[in-house]
Image 1 (tube, rainbow, N blue to C red):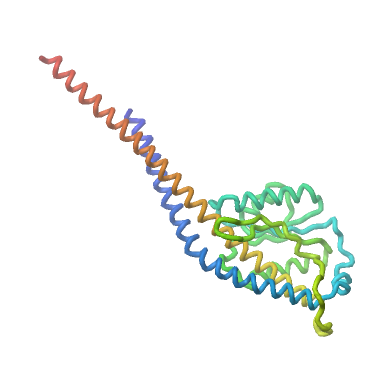
Image 2 (image 1 turned 120 degrees about the vertical axis):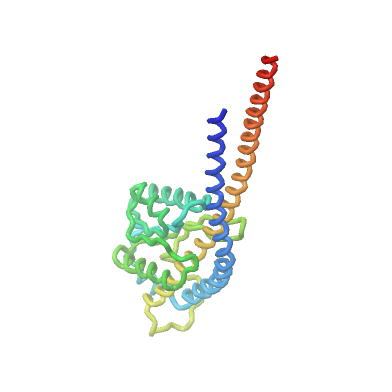
Length: 272
């Protein structure tokens, strides 16, 4: 009985310590989420206007000329993941989709954001051309430009299709796993007057900067939302488990006290 009490007591202490860490992670996620969501909503408008502008600056003819040697068998996937765990389906969802695409496309390579994605792609034997870890929760054009420059350089060498796998933030309770083809794309809108002073490459550089920045923001906001949900659920489960363990501890302790009292009474009776 004494050994059982000591074991339960150690489990209670372990769960309490884990809950302290989980609560700290939840508080950090909550504090960052509001600003991340606000930044994302502003950037969504910017990204939409940028896409509209790119559509009007480019023509199908000059874009087709730029991508005329593209090899549809070659694909580059940009994977968005987190550096930390405890964020529910955020990493497992992107990992499963990356695995499916790798199996479908034998000639594919990856750009990975986040240590969880880097570890997973390595585990399934995927080849990465770049890995970016510890990206800030409030990404800026500085981070997106580093990634977009890498994409542009790789595209010039390999002439491949480019996709992104990430979670798009819809609302606090809804995040959508996206496989988005970001290049090449079709021009659908009417053109402005042709801008002779702007090259296709200059326009596409602005386009990639904008798209990657929005994807980073979508992913980081979704990650924080997932983490809030997961840590809150973990704290709820921890409280329930603690309550159950404390009941068991008290029952065993009470039983031990009752047995000791019975033994004392029995001893007294035997002496009469």
